[in-house]
Amino acid sequence: MRVFARWVSLLFAVCLVGVSGTRVLARRDPPPDVAQLMPDEDCPAPCWAGLQAGNLSDEALHAWLEFPPRGWRAERSKPTMTLPGAIDYWQITPLAGAPFGLAVVRVREPGGDAIELLPADLTLGEAVAALGAPEGILFHLGPDIAGVPMLQYQVSFREGDLAATGLLPADASHLAPGTPVEALIYRSRLVETSALAMDWRGFGPMARYYPQGVVP
Image 1 (cartoon, rainbow, N blue to C red):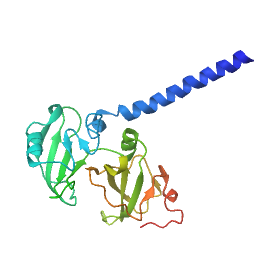
Image 2: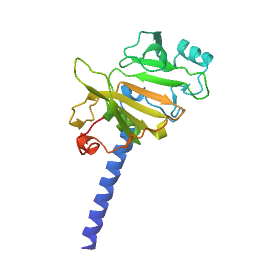
Image 3: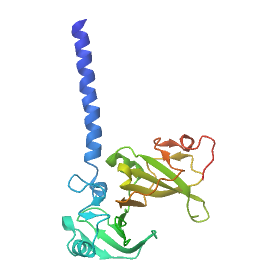
Image 4: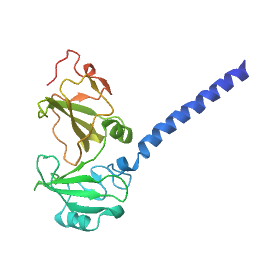
C-alpha cells in the first residue's frame, strides 16, 4: 500500500511540474510576433526594446529610429488610429512577422512620455499569456463602428507600467481570449485609477464584471 501511495505521489509531482513548466514557458517564450511587443529581462516595463518611457529624449529616440534593434526597419507612417497625445507615428518592420505601429506621446514634464505599440494582430489572451494575470480592467463607452456601439477596455499589467486597450461590442456577452488588442501602452507615470476600474476576474461572461447587466 505504501509503495502504491509513493507511486501516486510521484506521478502527481511529475504532472505538477509539467503543468507549471508549461505555464512558465508560455510566459517566457511567447510566439515571435507577440514577444517583439513585450518587455524583457534586459528592458523591463516601462522600457521597451531599448526605449525608456518617461525618460525619452529627442536624441535617444532619433538614434533608435536611425538604427533600430534586431535588424528592424523604421519608417514614418500615417496613424491607423488616433491616440490621445500621440503626434509621431512610425511603422516598424521586423525581420520576420508582421509590421506593427509605434506611436510616441511627448509630454514636456517629468515622466510624461509614453510609448504605444499598435500590433497588427494581437489578442488579449496572447497578452495575458505573455505577461501574466492583469491587475485590473476598466470599461467605458467607445466610438460607434458602422453604427454598432462599442466598449473600450483597458487592462493594466505590472503596477500600471503597461496596459492593453481595445474595443468590443457593447452588447458582447463574453470577454474572450480572442478579443483584439489595438494598442499596448508603456508609461512610467501612473495614471490615477478610475473609480470604475475593477479587479481582473478572468475571461468569460461579462456578467462576471456586471452581474446586473449594467455596462458604462
